[in-house]
Amino acid sequence: MPKPDLDDLDRRLLAELGADARLTQVALAARVGLSRSAVQERLKRLERDGVILGYTLRLGQDSRPGVRAYLLVRGSGPSHERALKRLEAFPEVRVADSVSGDIDLVLQLEADRLEDLNRIRDEVARLPGIASTQTLLVMAARFDRR
Image 1: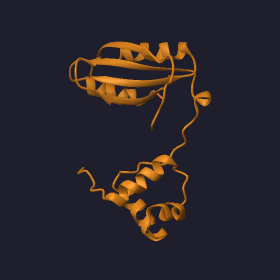
Image 2: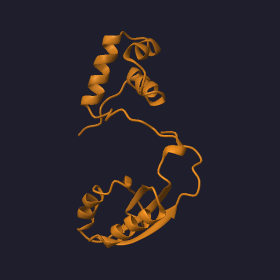
Image 3: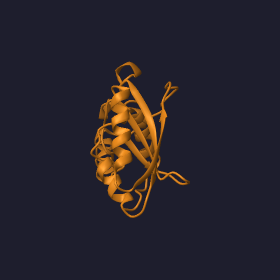
Image 4: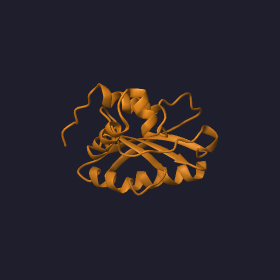
C-alpha cells in the first residue's frame, strides 16, 4: 500500500490528536483553522487510508501491568514468519518490531507478575522458528512520548 500524502494541515491535525485524542472536531477545527466539516472529512480520509488506526487510552505508570521487558529474538529458517504469526496470540506481547542486525525481532512485553513474564518468555523460546531469546527487564520508565 502506498504511503499516503500528508499535507501541513494533516500533520497539524495528527499532532493535535497525538497530544490529546479526546479533542472534539470543533476544538480541532479551531486549533488548525478549518471548519468542523473540513476536519471531519480529513479525519475520515486519514482513517480510511490507515494513517489513523484508532483512538486509545494511555494509562499512567501506576495503572500499567507490574512488569515490563524487551525480548530480543533471533529467528531460524523459514518458520520464522510462522512464529511471528503465533506471537500475535500472546496478549502480553504489546509490540513486535523487526530490526536490523543480529537480532530479528524486539518484543515489548507487559505482564502483571514476573512469573507471567517468565512463562511467556519460555513459550516464545519454544516456538518453531525461534533460535534464541534474550530478556531485558525494564527497571524504571524514564519517559514515553507516544
